[in-house]
Image (cartoon, rainbow, N blue to C red; front, top):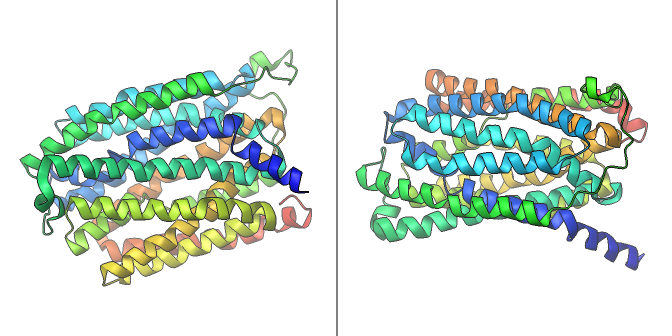
Length: 423
């Protein structure tokens, strides 16, 4: 048993799992040097009251447009029986477009470049997840996906840390930590543009790592003589997969962008650049701490229990945020919010593989990421509109109510699958 355990951990921490982890680490290092600072960057182009609406439009349209490509790229990787070329193309597109944010001269240009970045994500995500799932055994799937997310969150911590160091050198300690700033001035905008340009370096590294380190075996799945004329190669996907997909879609309607939490803290407590970066880092530290334990629980206790627990944590956090009156309390909620990610990210993606045959897995991940991505459009867009029309407090309460509805739906729709031992 000890040898088997050591072998399992060797599989988790080696091969394509480690390679994709390094790719995600560097890619997120680049992305998170830019992403958490976009609300402040937007404020240099428009009144702060419009920033929430712009965030909702940007995130909703970007993710939903990318979802079209997630659906197609997953199916295409099944037809071609090749995952790596599509994954490589997706990372390359994102890491070419993302640093161009430094040249943006208006809010709509920032949103358009964000859309281009997310299109790259749409190309790569389903083939990458399918290739990762095919590189490991079912027994360690939850931990492998959680390790991948751990590395992803590691980059999400490193990116803001690099940003903080750079902005400290550009702006000095006083301006970096100054509170009471509602809009970015010329000095802040100048520093942010240089920071965004430097994000090209880790992005290029991520693309090179994928090209050189990730290995793809020649597919052992026999080519169907009719597969060239169809998107599908393995018939319809199991009904239990679509039941789970329905529950995930409803939950996503209440799951808006995390940028809203940071923007809420910035506006409520009137925080400067340094504080915004610190809160983003705190959130991702919580995700890192919870990633591997969450994957272990998903493998040991079942994916269903992990997902239900994670969604319940989300419900608590979104209910508590709008009634928080102290910054310390909000920091505690961010730590708890990391538990939601730890319990669900690996479990949801592992459950997709559990529910589908190997030859249809690219298509299944395309459906999963696509449907969740489509639901992101009304989620973030409506959250931004609710924020502007009803106030931030009611926007968070509506998100919590949708999460509660999705949790009830999940318990009902997965009951039969659980009784059959599928999860």
